Image 1 (cartoon, rainbow, N blue to C red):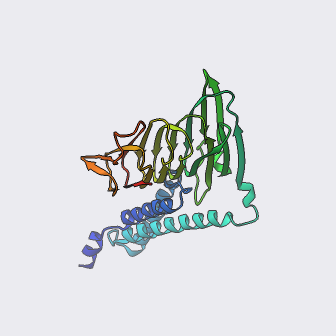
Image 2: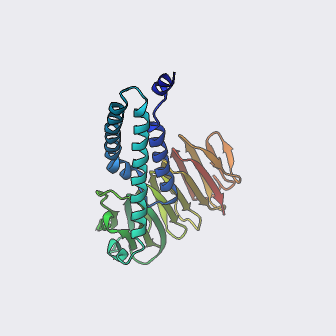
Image 3: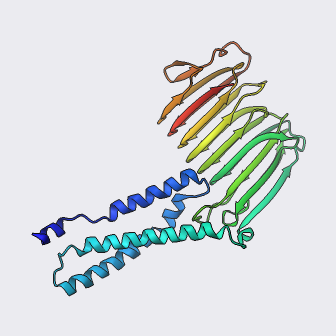
Length: 314
């Protein structure tokens, strides 16, 4: 009877792997610099190694016991899975602890860059960050004042700028070829010109976006985030219409909007909870009391797998 029970006992490999994956993504939620996909991509062969060793252990155990169906495979696979978890934890704490030792400065870098207008009367900017914390604000009399704090494994951000027919074309990118295990900082602070109209496109793989656009003469915003949360401040005295699109798998999006300027917001896709207490709702559209009554309009579109949206008027 006991042999039958042992043969039918399901192995714990799959549940343990699910727990590991869940923990990785939970860590990424609270630590934007942590990239779970690269961990999985880089270290998944460890699962095969430990399970292979476990199978060898099971075979040897079954040979000694003289019963190949004694249920030892389930125990061996579980031991291998637990060993896999232990190795991941050791690597994680080793990486985090390394950041506190005296060699920390050798793996972290800080760079600043300033880009002059060079006669541009309007700007088109593209920002592509693989992960981390991205802060965008005004306060510059140039095209851009940028400060980057990043782990060496990310590679230095690349800023490219040129002017054609009075339009400044700016791009800020970063190579993301190496895996990052543990907590790796990749913080960008970008300050744009406060008097030159700006069309801004942002792609962030995972992390947190803090877009303080109140003092920027923004005309268009295209924001695509893979995961994390974002705050977008579109308040302030707007002289031109603003078209803002937020797409991707953002966990939480908070958008601050002006009360004195007409606003229409459209939400579609896998949207979760929407909080818009001061807006009039009709279908999937939200408008404020000033909509259609002001010479300037803010058009906001939120689509994709956004978990929750909070529209605030100030």
